[in-house]
Every structure is written in C-alpha cells, then in structure tokens.
Image (tube, rainbow, N blue to C red; front, side):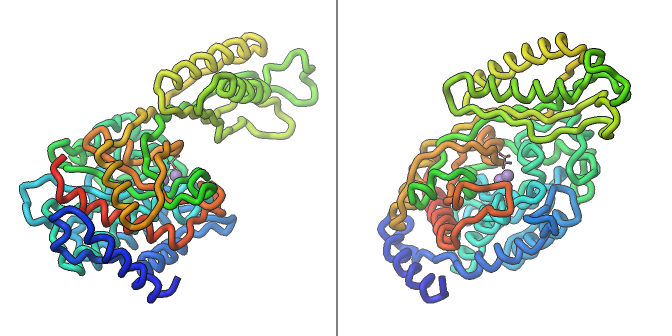
Length: 436
Ligand code: HGY
Ligand code: MN
Ligand code: MN
C-alpha cells in the first residue's frame, strides 16, 4: 500500500479517533507510519535468513544477537532510553507526565524457531517501537511511563518474561538450547547477568498494564476475514524430555524376538500420545516435536531415545489428565518391550486469561478504526501469559494467511500489520487515560 493511502487511512483514523473519551478529544491523535513499520519488518526478515529456508534467529545465536542489536537501534531512533536487564530482556522507556505512575508496557519477542517465519513476535516488537516513536514524534505525552519490552528466548519457553514474573527456576539455566549454548551461557552472550537473574524480577505495583500485538498463528481470522482478534486466553503448556532406554545390539545378528529396541518403543509411545490427546473432547493438543536415536547407526538396534513431548490446553487439569494417561501407556510399552521410560519436566507455563477491561479497550479501539473483531483463544503461548500473572494484560491478534506459523510460509498482509499497530496505539492512548 503506498504512502498516500496510509495518509488517507490516517485521515480516517484521525477523524474516527476523536470520537473518544474526553481526554483524547483534545489531542490530535497521531497515525502510525505504516511504511516505516513495514520497512522495518522487511529489514528484520533479512537477519537470520536460513539457507535451508525461513528464518533461524534462534535465541542466543549470532543471528539473535544481530536482531537484538537492530531493534535496540530502532528503539534509540524512536527516542527511547534503552537498557538490558539481568535476564537479557531489552527495555526501551519513554517518560510519562507523572513519573510516580506504574509503567504501561507493550512488547513481544524477536527470537525465532529454527527455519521459522518473519512475523512471529516481530510484528509485536516492531509495532510497539512504532507506537512509541509515533507518540514521541507527535509530542503526545502519556500520563504513564511507556515501556517497550523485547523478551529474550520466548521460543525456548518464555525464559525472559518468566524471569520478569519470577517463574523462571535457577535449574533452567543449565538447560541446553538450539543455539548449542546453555541458557546460562546464552543469557551472558546477549548481555544479561545470569548470576543475578532475580534482579530482572518486577513487582505488580510497577506495572499498570501489559499489551501485546501478535500474529494469530492460527487460521480463523484469515478464513473468516476478521481484521482483529481480541485474545480471551492463552493456553498453558507443559513440556518434558522423555528418555527411553533399551539395549543397543547388532542389527544383523540380534533375532527380532530378543531385541529391546528403544526406537520401536518410542514409535509406540508417540502413537499413544496422539491416541490419548484425540480420545477426549476439547481443544487440547499434544506433540512430539523432537527425537534423537542413539547411537543412530544403520546397523545398531537403538539402545536409547530422547524425545520432546509437549501438551497444551486452556485447562491445566486436562493437561494433567492426558499426561497421566500417557504415563500409563509408557509403563505398558516398557513392560512389553523390556525398555525403561523416564520423564524430565522442561517447562510448565500456566494457562492465562487476559483482563476483560483490556479486551474491551482493544475491541473499542478496533471498532472505532472501522475494523471487525472476534474474541479468540490462543493455542500458542506468549509472553503475555507470563505478564498476566503480574498485571492486567491483553493481546491483539492480526490474521495469519492460511494459519501457517513456525514455518517459512508464515505471512500477514501489510495492511493487517498496520491495522494491528494502529489498534495497539489506540489502545495505549485509551488505557493511559483510564484507571484500572
Ligand atoms: O510455541 C509457541 O506457542 C510460541 O510460538 N512460542
Ligand atoms: Mn511468538
Ligand atoms: Mn513462536
């Protein structure tokens, strides 16, 4: 969409935006610069490009470091005062008219999954910076301090936002990550101080509200041609490393009846997970997304397998129920195959409901912009989930074409990106004038 169209869009936005609370009527509301945020999105899409396809800006990698450097530069150009906390989260602050008030925080993440897309986390991060820059350039002074937070290692289990909410456990620092570094090494690599992780913790009293713009990563908004998703709740997620120990042996001389094949046991386990998750009504999901067979040679019966299991649902109790069934199945497979199963919990993100007051602000902001809205649930986890344990939190979704995400084909129309950023801007202005 060319510049004059954004301006026309802007006039519409300006005209509509003055139909609002008294606090806002007197202010000439700025318009986000759509060209600028789309240009930043394109530039970010060049950082971490993977020759095998997609974007691999995995947390704590050199590409992640470059991406973080890029957004810190944008924050400074937007007039934000930047810093990195002990957990490695990037903060950009804009003073408010009343420094005694708690901060209104907006943000997301810029790390990606391996061979992921260009929009997951980035739309909300660059959108937050654009909102701050637009306010700063328009000399629109908020009452509350505005803080843009870009959380570290969202894809590896919400590490940055869970450090802020106080949920991250010391033992997680020893976990290995896709970058090859431990979480501890990774946090140091991106400029944090893992020996003082607790310093990153925030108090509820310091946060007025948290808002996150994000792509839906599901297909309902795109399919139903709805402009904006107002997120009702974010699923909880539990993840485990499952180790299956059998007996390595010669693939040629070991009769089939004498094998304790760890990979065959793993295959039966994976099928059992799918069967248990789909055997009860509801929207729960279960995935085995990674597997390692040891020693991994053609001519050796696998003696050991490590696989990654995750279960998600809006109801913690349902996650536990499915897990208990999966464990029973594992015990039966172990007995039948002479193997041994062990489970190590890697992550446990609680389900999180957004704040109804923020849902109303988002819905009002969108409809005053002439945009259609729908209340949706998030099957993806988000930093807003961690932040909702600290302060009233809300999420704004924009459509993902075909519902594709965590893949190179991930795509959101530029107009939808700019709509989302305008709704974020409008919601920030609306929230700032309210008492929660
Ligand atoms: O995996 C997720 O749900 C999110 O994209 N990190
Ligand atoms: Mn994300
Ligand atoms: Mn993601």
